Every structure is written in structure tokens, then in C-alpha cells.
Length: 216
View 1 (cartoon, rainbow, N blue to C red):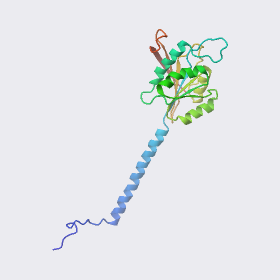
View 2: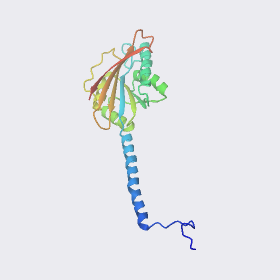
View 3: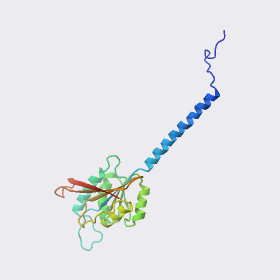
View 4: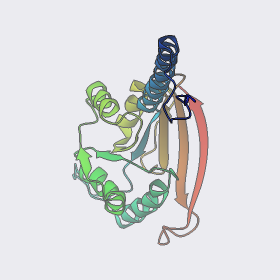
């Protein structure tokens, strides 16, 4: 009695047409996976970039001093600002910190720099276009803090196509935060926050925050 191939454990040969059909199905599946990976990479690389602009905090009022340092109140407000910025994003947090070459901006940046372990990069804010272009190129999809002087802040925001209606700051107005979000597609948004002390300035951790939002 003849023993069949299946009984002897020998696999039945697969017709060539079936093999070709299986191979042809692998091509669209592999292509679909590659497209998905490509789209995921694209959307990740085009993520929203957020740039936070603040003015330096309170300074010593010394006649003839062209580069004043922070006053006691300024150091207290810088600590309060660090409290706000440190937790401004619950997922990622600030990725880079920029300050102008002025002593008061660098002293304002010091507390948040120390807390986050991020070095302060010193740049000239009056070179508006190259400065903002470099920030966007180096920090796409990240959160960047820029500490500058009051007269440089509005032009920097406008360069990003943010709000063109930023009001002039009073000489003693130090508690504004402007958050500009630049999506890979869509309209740039400008959010304005104000942080300050509830009562006594010697308690910097008791702060109040209010906000408004404008479109660029």
C-alpha cells in the first residue's frame, strides 16, 4: 500500500502562482507601514514651537548707570518668574533660555536657569530677524524662553507674525509674559500673562496670574 506524501510528513508543494500572490500582498502592506512612519516623522518634525518673551525684572535706580543690576525686589520677582516658568508646560518644560547681553536680563534668567539646569545663551535682541530665524531653526517644536528689554520685546513678537498690538510698557511694569505659539500650519497665537505679588513683595511665592489672548 502506497504511503501518501502527507502521511510521510512531506509538505505539499505550493504552486508558484500562490507564492507570487503572497509576495504581491507584502508590497502594499510594507508601503503602508512606510507611509505611516513617514507621516509620523513629518508631524513630529513640524510640531508647534512656543517662544516665551519676558522683560527683565525690577532694577536699581542709580543715576548714570547704563547697565543697572536687579534690585532686591527684582531678585524676588525673578524667583517668582522662575516659579511660573518652571511649570509652564506640564509635559516638557522650557528647552532653551536666551537673554540679552545686559546684566539685568542675565540676572533675571539666573533662577530659572539654575532650576532647570539650562545654560543661558546671550544674544543681541535688536538683530531681530536673524535672531528669531536662528531660534526657530534650532528649536523647532520646542519651548524657548527669551528675556530681553522692553523696547525689544514687541519687534521680536511681530517678527514671528504674533500680535502687532502689544502695548508700550511703563517704566515700572515688569510683570508681563508673552507666549507666542507658532504651529506648522495655521495661525500664530499670542497669549499675554501677568504675574505679580498678592500682597507684600517680600513673599515672592505668593503670586497672582491673569491672562488674555490675541491673534497675530
